Amino acid sequence: MDEQQHLAEQFEENRGHLRAVAYRMLGSLSEADDAVQEGWLRLSRSDTSAVENLRGWLTTVVARVCLDMLRSRKSRREEALDPLQVGAHVAEPIAGSEGGTDPEHETLMADSVGLALLVVLDMLTPAERIAFVLHDTFDLPFEEIGPIVGRSATAARQLASRARRRVRGTSTVPDADLTRHREVVDAFLAALRGGDFDALVAVLDPDVVVRADSVAAPPNGSEISGARTWAKGAVAFSRFARFVQPALVNGAVGLVWAPGGRLSRVLSFTIKRGKIVEIDVVADPERLRELDLAILDG
Image 1: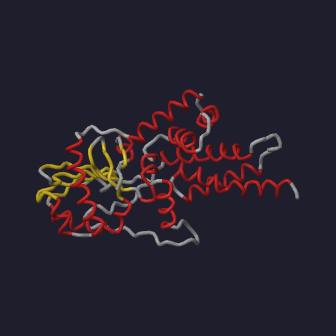
Image 2: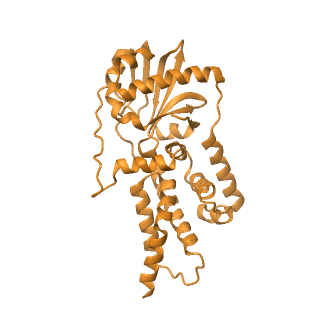
Image 3: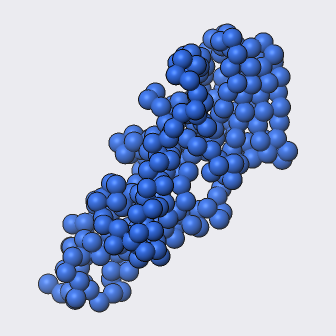
């Protein structure tokens, strides 16, 4: 057996582990596969004769590839059309394994990792995400994580600690109000998922105001008033609502829309007397990163 074939066999033995590492960092199967493939290319071009722990070496290489991909993603984040706009229609990807990512498979993978975790991870900086995932999920010591993110071991520990606090989240709303507001938001989400126009109108104040920022409703944002007016467009969103989850948004009950675990939209609510009187739809990446999110059991 020649050296290249031996390397290929060793790589295949670690492929599942490397894919799991990359998926937890990137939240996308297609990007994870790209990162793993790049790991193989780097392995095939490297002299690993002195490497004692090939699995650890490959994990480090794939982590660095993921870090570069996350940084690139932050600089060129692509925004999808917003189906929460009245009258908007967005084509849902067709599931299939040939020639691209299977969205159903990606959703199942997100569920197995924990969709809630992927959503919150998307709020972290690339370095925070790498440090948190490598340490808290794969038990890498900070002495090994530090060089990957270009920090000292102490700084890497601080990155993971900061990420951990954001993942856990905190509430600034009294428990009694949270319970009541959660019931209202749950009713809203159930109506949305069921495409139930009447149930959706029932949970909204008749004069509800729905505001969307300029990314959710290009080019200048939008504001819609009236429960029945907005609900007509919102029920068309029901087929996408499986990706919506309850969350604490800056300590108050809201919703996040994260297809495939990638945070795309956040809905925050103003609730009075058991009715939703205002909804704010946030999609701007900068504003999303400023939010404190903690996913609730849904």
